[in-house]
Amino acid sequence: GKLNRAIRVSRAIRAGTVTVNCFGEGDATTPFGGYRQSGFGGRDKSVFALDQYTELKTIWVDVAEDDA
Image: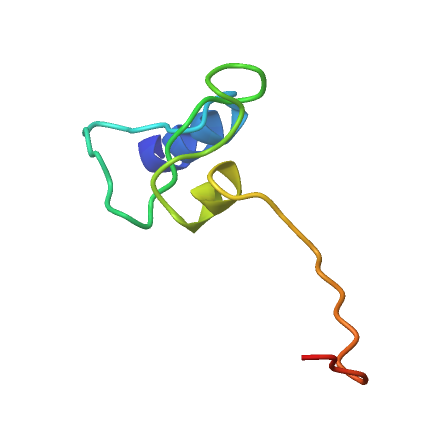
């Protein structure tokens, strides 16, 4: 029926957020952001946004001989 069509069309639309017959801002767990090359290239407002605000760093420390 109409619900199946809405789901099928929502999946086909190239967008990060699709609403059907409603408007919702979501909550802290709902990612928000552009799709593909739009926006800043990532998601905001959820655990999916953490990599946008952090830098990875690897530190190797040999603790076998501590001179201190």
